[in-house]
Length: 377
Image (cartoon, rainbow, N blue to C red; front, side, top):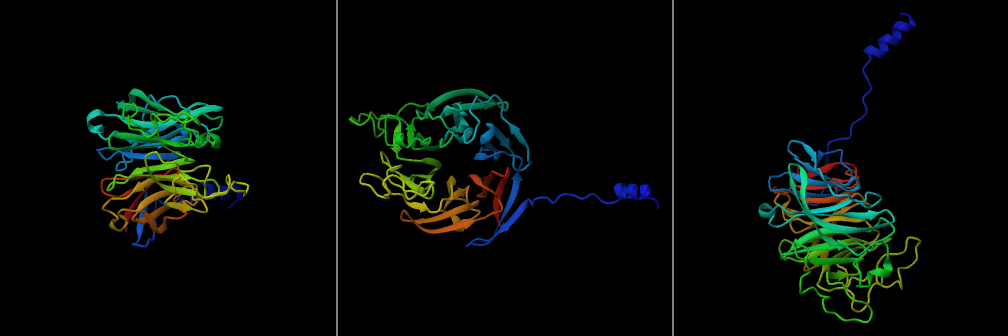
């Protein structure tokens, strides 16, 4: 066999080398038995929120490209929603959260948060909109935070409904000097009626203070970068988690008018290793956290689990970890954390969003581009 014929035989007869494929399922152990993580959607970009519709489909936000994608996890069909508002898509800016109105079946309102402005001057805004024929057909501005910054970090942007009101988180935008100043919205949680009106019983309405003039929308202040917000399905309490700096990530029970201390008190440190402020963790008149992560796990979305698929996890706080790439499970008794478990470590990527479907299966949005569905083995 001459050399030319040998080369032809090798090229056309020898089997092609196929790159190894990432597995579409992973098995994990937990304190309450094994579970499986199945990839049910892929090719996404920074899925920052997952919101199920009554028909079982879900809206998935792709933060850094500013898309709402309607996904049917049963068929795999993905459709991007058209006619989206203009938004800033740079660094940590983009599309942050989505929530259905509690009466969505009757009124069709969907609430979203996103970054608006220019790279050197932006804030976080909240709109409500309606979708028809796979495109935004109607849109109203609910709230624009007075939290402008020349950088594109710490927007917050989580949304929750409770007791007929909507709660919205606003990050400190890396302006510590503004967080304890109630004349702006940086580092706060605001409370509104569903149409954006300010409730008459918000805690800082009518407050006269020589230090500042409080904004009427404020519900709490002293937050750094709130990335998780959830209403407890049994107690109605509002819970929040936020990024600390180097260490000091927090889980907080949100109370009307409370000050959560940033940057006056913190369990974290400066990125160069020095103390935050005076280096103290307690100050009179400032609320104490419920749980702290040192070192930081970079907490993302928050869900309080009440599903049937994992009965041993009922009542657990499920928090995504961006830094340590796992699902963090906290067990609380009488308002205090009594156990922590780190689930699905290492293989699913940076967990940015969490949701639970009608059957109690847990969905995790990963920066790797997948939506993972957790099911018992």
